[in-house]
Image 1 (cartoon, one colour):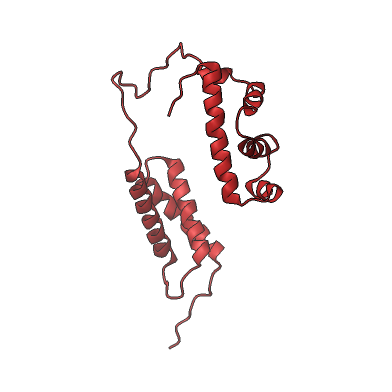
Image 2: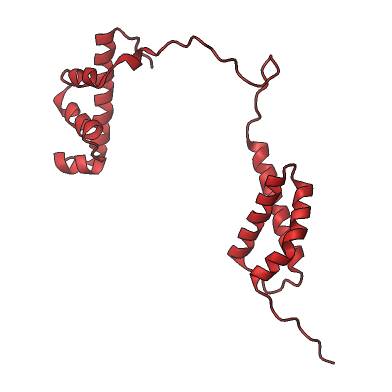
Length: 177
């Protein structure tokens, strides 16, 4: 007696056949129907990436197992995220301060920065101007000035430190760490 084997179906047919069952199960797992739909979609993506393994007899069970593992992964990831903090007013929202003062650095203009650049060492100023104003990459600056890329980064950091010092003195701002 010969056992008739069913013809192999395409993955597309297998997914279409399993979708209603998976959606029902996903809705039971997820609180939000949008999350359930996303979970089924992610299950299908994983199945398409790997294909149906050779020894699988029940593709719905195989897809359900994938979906369940994905759901557990989502739960584990969610448990590692920080929980929102509830404030004393009970709304969970920080009170908005109406009168927020403008930070002192916001009054400084590009022209002020260009003038302050004249007061820092030329070796650092050149790198800063090429990077900040000419929008050159570290590699291009290194080629142009015949220095290494690391030296460009070091000089740029020192230029920023010196520029900050000049601006703090010039505008009477507090030097924050």
